[in-house]
Length: 372
Length: 197
Image (cartoon, rainbow over all chains, first blue to last red; front, side, top):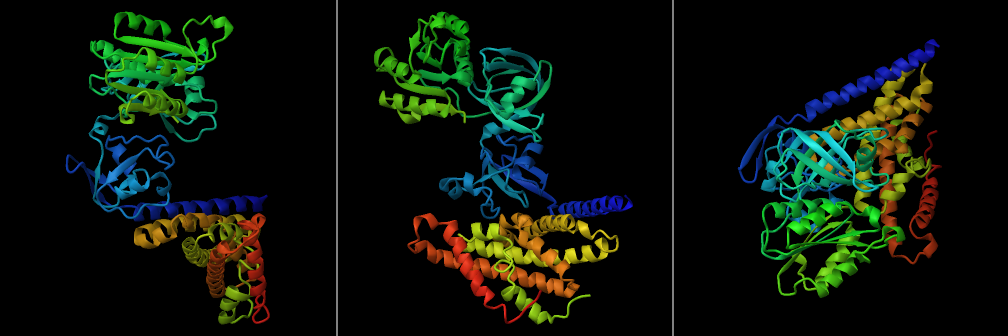
């Protein structure tokens, strides 16, 4: 009995001493003093304490680089161009960087530690990225597996974003998930709604964030959001727009179309193809049909690939790519310039890009938001 | 009571005649997987040598001044592993600060060494054979160098074997294990010259 007590005590003390040693060494060795981070050639200069990875150094000063994995080096989203010499590429970065990126000094900001003065280049938009504390205003089921989540912004109270951009929900640890994670979702409301953010979140079986939103998140709960990010937004041209979405890919397209409606866009023809399996996967049907009446240049074409007999479906039937191809051949103007806007699964997007290319759209005029 | 072996004999015996890899077959997992690449083998060998020498010394102190006085010898496995893990952590931080070049050369292998059984094996042999402190350090250094030698030899052989016509079923790990068997036999040839047990 006494012996077992001793044993526990000795092992405990030994571990504590070693842990203390590690902490002490860490605080001495990893103390690099004050260093300067020079962003975009002097447009911003930050004085920070060295020793932490660039991603966290920046987020402490309120600059948020997109990161889906929260700095674990697994998503590869936090790429940043580093102009000063920060040593060779680390083995943890190499698998996520292409040869081209390596040549251009693109690095993973979550792996590169700030040890001395450093100068970096980031897109100007990232300066407007903020971390919002929010409260869940409403959660609605729009289909059997997609929820519309509306978050009221508490601090800061307002957000500026371009229709089509996304934000990252910060999912706290829950159940067996021990670490906080971040996942990106497109904002589905139009930018004129500044005091809240709306998302469409489809339940992915086994998905950490979607399970949390579907089963754990309740109204009036608090949740953190970082954003806005992304380069999926409407290009200001006079070209006709061909939008294609499936499932929760509805979100950015809905935001884009309502935004164009509010801005009074009348010249560009807007086609919106929405693919679903059967009627139970369709949503916002009435709203968009309503909008069609108010906006003569907007056409909404929902298509079901496998309508059930009880659906009594009278609209388009077939794979969204086939419907798209048919419309290109029969209805969509051949003379006008066209741009493609796609949001959905990688498989759907790749198939749609092929259809668009075969119908004369240039690949660089097709913009998309792939969710993996 | 520490055995009566000359340091010189102990050093060479731990490299050749009782090579930790080829006569005790410890540290096999990284031995087989890393030996594909000559450069990585060198990095890992260097890291193992480095860590095994330091942790053997530390473990000797912990064992003789903490575990024996409190009669807790049966806890040696867990204590040795804790010491090894902590040492690797501290070493990693120190090396990163002091020498970026060495840090890059060791790379991902340094943290991986925590779970290399050769390191724990050396600590346990050191205790089993009642080595004195000096003997333990020599034995640790020798075993590390022996490990380094063995992995370099194997990766060199594998580069040759890669170009040889190996039956399909034996490609990869199969032929590697056979190669290791031959190497072990060759090393056993040294056994009559010096012996430490």
